[in-house]
Amino acid sequence: MAGIYLHIPFCKRRCIYCDFFSTTQSERKAEYVRALCRELEMRKEYLDKEPIETIYLGGGTPSQLEKKDFEDIFSYIYKAYPVTSDAEITLEANPDDLTPEYIAMLRTLPFNRLSMGIQTFQEPILKLLQRRHTARQAIEAFQECRKAGFQNISIDLMYGLPGETSASWEQDLTQALSLHPEHISAYHLIYEEGTALWKLREQHKVEEVDEDLSVSLFSALIDRLTTAGYDHYEISNFCLPGFHSRHNSSYWTGKKYLGCGPSAHSYDGISRQWNIASLDKYIAGITNDSPAFEIEELDLYTRYNDFIITSIRTEWGMPLSRLRNEFGEKLYNYCLRMANPHLKQGTLEIKENTLKLTRKGIFISDGIMSDMLWVE
Image 1 (cartoon, rainbow, N blue to C red):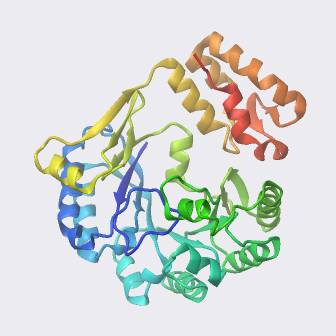
Image 2 (tube, rainbow, N blue to C red; image 1 turned 45 degrees about the horizontal axis):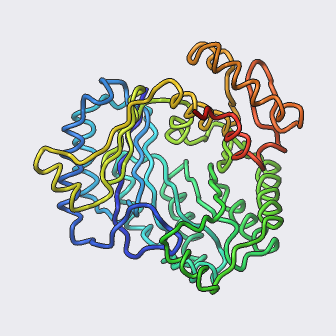
Image 3 (cartoon, rainbow, N blue to C red; image 1 turned 60 degrees about the horizontal axis):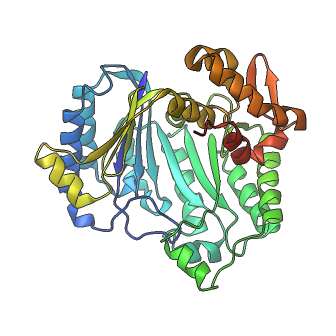
């Protein structure tokens, strides 16, 4: 089984924290969709005809596309790829795009999962982040999607935001849980170099939350969501039983995926490649049958490091039998030796021959994974 990721780079305006590749050149949407469909056609052999079980349109803001754009894209996908009948097909959407008319249009297409970028229900913070929606719009958009028949809705939240308190985060969690989404992704705000948010911090116009508050917010997140019946299946992801993101989980379990569009990444089991992060160069390359991308062949040690980073972060953990079979005795022994201090400290555990983070370990997961990486 494999997946397809399509990067839709268009935004009405950029959020101040975002460092994903995006553009506000909405007048180029039709030209872009033609290039995207052409890339889908050109790369139909990349996944070696493996059945496609997930399709994910991310961005940018995919909900900036119109019905004909989606119809053209799906026409190419279903013509060139063997999509399974129960494929998970996700659209990332901004709440203010999800009008009743737009949602009704989406219901005529193959989408069966929505991922809504809400981030917070605090109005002053939404304005600071330059989000286009209000808290009321987010709530109403979610309710309209539910009313229209969408039974698998994910919402994105952020914490560690400027001016955030434990009380305001508890309010966000209460509001999110009252909507009963099937899935919640919650990410700590990162100050990415070059973003508008980074510059505001440099100018001392905003301040990062301190580490104690960050830990407290993450702890509250885990407690509130697991108490409400959500599985904490990956460091930043929670779901009601049976509703984990099949597409994102494929990244963490080593499945193959094809990424189309500027900056999109692909993985075929032996190499990774990524398209150029430029709309002009992407469209020109596809149009001239010479796509602009870089490729990295993965040696044993790179694949081992990828395995560490992707498997340890999930509730399924790292199967030690797979570690030994795929990477050999040397790396198997190295991994256990590097994991040993964490096993003694109770931040890692071995259950049913699987190495996993404990609750205590989740809070320092980056350091644990870093310790187990192979460094030349």
